Image (cartoon, rainbow, N blue to C red; front, side, top):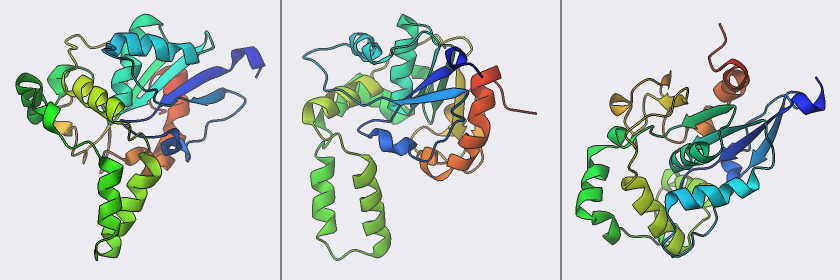
Length: 226
């Protein structure tokens, strides 16, 4: 395949996560080129749309696709409103504010998100010092490995724009992959998606074989292979 026909695929991780969540994702190099995006610290009073426009400065190609996980899925939708990708795929995310769980919509109306604890990594530091079991310690190590954006300005901004996301119209032709066991965005609230059986909110990590098998055809044709 000629180099100029390569599709450049930009991956956006979830809230506070670093791009290493995609470390197990492989796409054929003669057909696709992977680009990993990282969260930037938001500017003062920066809107989600303005942030998306700033993130698009990292997209250097005309033939490109956007793939976002969780809050990263929300961000790539905002990016797609500004610069249309060849394919738009979201994973473990939502397509409109109507798909947000009730407690998030409640937090949006009451501003309860303003009192959430934000020191995630500091909290994990304290847990590691406690006499807890191996399961808890392994889970903390997992979160520490993949969640690295602990800047208060970013976390406050991200939480607010996630729970207050005001999108009523679903973007046409968006591809939504969602786990049936997702506890952050329960599948029962999600419409028109490709279900991944027993997939949790972190299935990009532990269901990577499914993604490596199916992402190529989704990027080519917008559907699962027969």
